Amino acid sequence: MGPTGVISSQGMSWWLPLKTFIFLTILLIAPVTDSLPQRLLRNLEQQDNDYFYTHGQIKCRVCPAGFHVEEHCTIPNSNSTCEPCEEGSYSEGPTGLMNCHTCTHCRTDQEEVSACTNKKNTVCRCTSGKYCLPDNPCEICHKCSTSCPEGEVVKHPCNATADIQCSQPSIRNRLWRCITIVSAILFVIIGVFAGYRVLEKRWSRTVSKTIYALMSPWVQLQRIVNAINVLSFNTIHIYKLFSNL
Image (cartoon, rainbow, N blue to C red; front, top):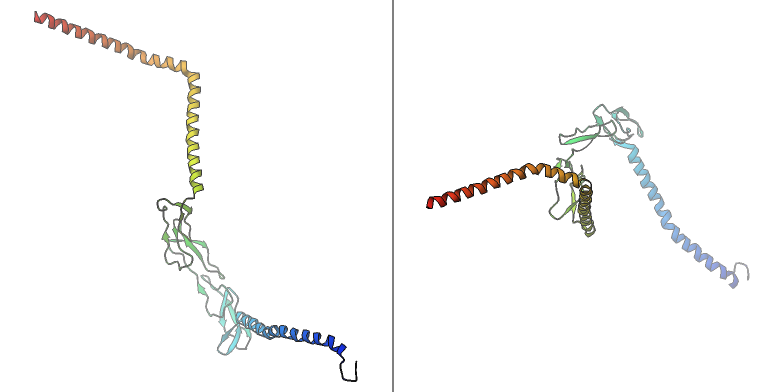
């Protein structure tokens, strides 16, 4: 250290890096500290909107789900008079409304999934065989398609929120289907052949005797008929010979 109030060259060696570090730290922290009050303010405003509503120039506390405002507050930031929703009406969240919402009644092409409560509206869905897309207002339930276009297969069946979804069958599915069909046919053929061989060995004699016993009268009758035909032919032939004499 030199004379009083004068920093020596040795002191400058650590002072300059420290000064630079402090300056960079201030530059980095300044944007964060500057935006922090703004974020806190936005959060407070959001909470204010969630818990209060404005009636005229006065802010009143909202009523909880399942209730409606019966009388507005007269003192700022105080509670309003709340009353429960009557049967057939509901409010799903904090509200500053004087009336609850009327419960929805399912249409004839819909079925009720869950009933309406004072905190939740009725949940409806299309009946079986019909659907309604969830992204659009369900004004009418559409009838499900019964099949896919030729050459396509059903990927997903129809449900309450979507029609059947079709797609081209994959090569793997086609190959598996062919293998399944061929295997089934071969199994049936082998089963029939094996059963036939077993029956042939066990019942060949019995079946042969039964068939012979059943066919024997017909064979004898056929022989008699043949003999009568031969006799008739010879008789006619002899008659013609004598007629020509």
